[in-house]
Length: 298
Image 1: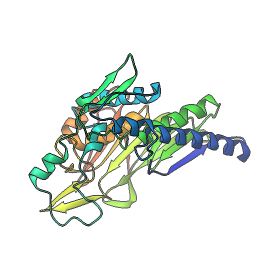
Image 2 (image 1 turned 120 degrees about the vertical axis):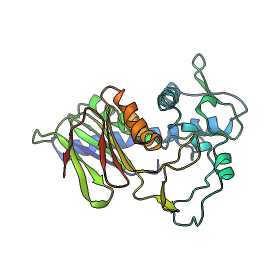
Image 3 (image 1 turned 45 degrees about the vertical axis):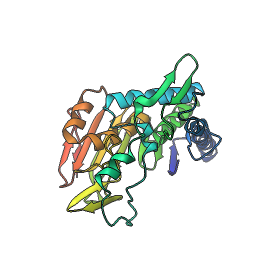
Image 4 (image 1 turned 135 degrees about the vertical axis):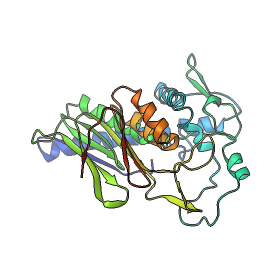
């Protein structure tokens, strides 16, 4: 998934811990094979190869993930969209961009993007991408889903507590060996060596999306590497979004979506969701939170 996973478990000894960690690694590898668009033999690659041609029958697991992704697209008015993979890669965040793409180039770049063109057939468990050249990808939801599945597997195997850390996407359960809650620090995007806040997290997920590492700047405007799939323009105005949710899959998708929707719309949407909270830091370092969260500021 192009991400490093760090797995922490509470166990009686190192033999038990290593066995549990190996279980989680195997589960994450299994999911990678299922959702990878780089593996030509994956179900995801088969769906993409048959875009505009025919529906593809898939496993119930992948069908369910795509169905939930479309639900998230509706919830976020298209700010989250797994068909973002159809987007032309006209924005470069590696330092090589010297000028902005034209409005026409940007508009054309998202011409094949649109979750409404992902057609699901519940009877046959098939997926059809209506437009030729369309693609789906799980970059904004896949590692969260993998973390959820690894956590669920470990819980079924009586692992009483632990953390699945998917490149900063944290999924926890239980408590530390000393009985205290796990705590998570939110990075201060204006000073990455410091935390902006520290929060306890007992049984749930926390995911942060940030533009403080990958961005471009033109005419005084900072453009994040997170691109609005509806317009083709990168998000602006926000440095980081942290979402707390019962599952990492949901937190993963919403963190990206809030970045795209902006502070007011994003917080409004989060406040409508049960057991979901959000912390946003804007370009000036100002902190915004959803209605039911209290943070210990540093």
